[in-house]
Image (cartoon, rainbow, N blue to C red):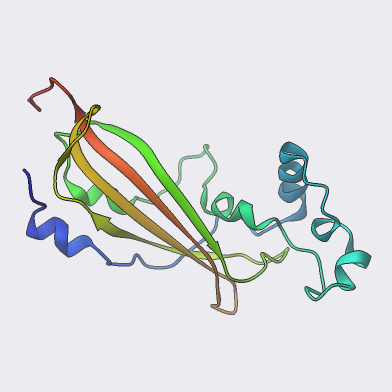
Length: 168
């Protein structure tokens, strides 16, 4: 299948319904994150300091954006990735190629974000040293309770069948 199908083409840009993040942006998770990456910035935990800045309050590190999308491992959630509709059964392997985040507004503690997802792009079939498949880019858009975009996360995957595998 060198060229993507009409059905696959129709999936590009189709945004999912908004869904709430599994939990609100919270200082406990942010504290663990800051500890893990050794981020001592007081803007994330010192209310007095944060109130004196143009941000006028504490907020979670922007790099945590994708964290708020991730459901707990248990119990299993019911969110289905838009990738399941791609029908790439002949390509059982996936490797992450690129992740890009863009930040628009602070992640305020207490906010429950809503997330929409979409397939942003699907390449025609490509062959690399790994095998043959498609580069697929997804885009998640995160909004705060005021429906303002706080950030986006684009993720490119190579979904492929290994070299030497005829796809049967």
